[in-house]
Length: 493
Image 1: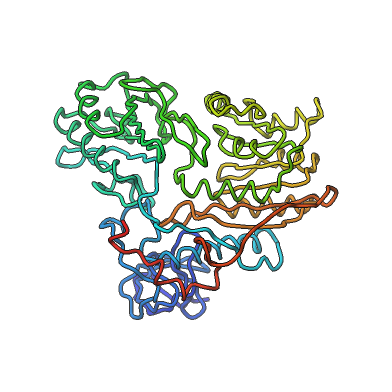
Image 2: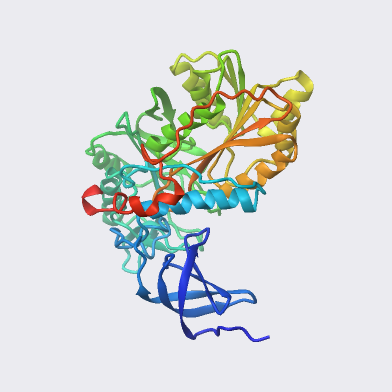
């Protein structure tokens, strides 16, 4: 059977939808073709690059008819840098795409029926929101340092003097480190040869405290002339911590285990909704603090906590969600596999005088079954915020055995969330509420929070969720009215 397209031939096609990676999807005589950079409602000319049995990939050559939601990306390297995927799509279009993605995953993968419109909480200004940056460092052909982000689907560094998603101070930090490396001819790390010294520049910025941490990741024991770099970085307003991180492994993991202080404090401080946190180079801390407050407030709201209820926080990290919940609950018990994170969580509870939150080191899928079976530990509410791969199935089995009144599932991957929801629904849970929070504007990623209740538990839920298009919440069906309002403009950067 012959296919309707051939490799290296050019075709005209209409784009119908966006895929999970932000690529345009259309059909040529019924044959599915993925086209990076194309948007729904566009008529485009494409060069077919690869052909499989049931689908192919095309290169965008020309836009014959443009989408009403297409905008000009402000970043000059938006097409090549792998950090953003959606700068060419208006912000209203991005929100609608993400809300629809959550809905589709819950219905297609999760097996839920008639999810309806998923409310999504967007940002007034979706730029310069990141409080953490990880810049890979390489060496260009001219012998000068290249600092930026990896190109799409590769580890080739796209040199990026300015990034419109990062805090503006990062542009200044990168410029100082770049001049330092070039001036002293300090080598950059080559991951293929496992040679060279400087691997990454990691920065953290406290949105409310204004404190800045600069961490230089090296493939060695020390950084030559580090005292000069420290002196130069000290001139940047807000820098409170300068450290080295030693990573000699043949790995794409960014940080190693050893941290060497060079100047200032070992941690910086920041706060979320009035709760203070100490943040180290290796701490997990959400990268968009403004939207993190929205996300965690929504999780607490959905949980409908009563003052006499106990909460289990699984994958608790440095205790951010735990401390939000502790202000409304009788007791919160957090579990996290990273020992340093648990130590941070304990210190964060102490620094905020929160005495009803305790923490234990270990894999949640191991600790919770043990505590449940050996000590009878249970909970009225369980909250989970797992990594992108979702929850371990052993843990899901234990959650089903505990059968809490309410389960709040926070996820950065709606596909694995939907998979786990399907498992939980087969074990007696029912989805009661869904919301999405745009934690990562200009990218395809979105945070989702889902409330489930157990059929054998008291299902009274004290939830006050507002729907509509106010306060940044854009329902899927209202793209057209909001397109102009959420179109990026240069004076908003």
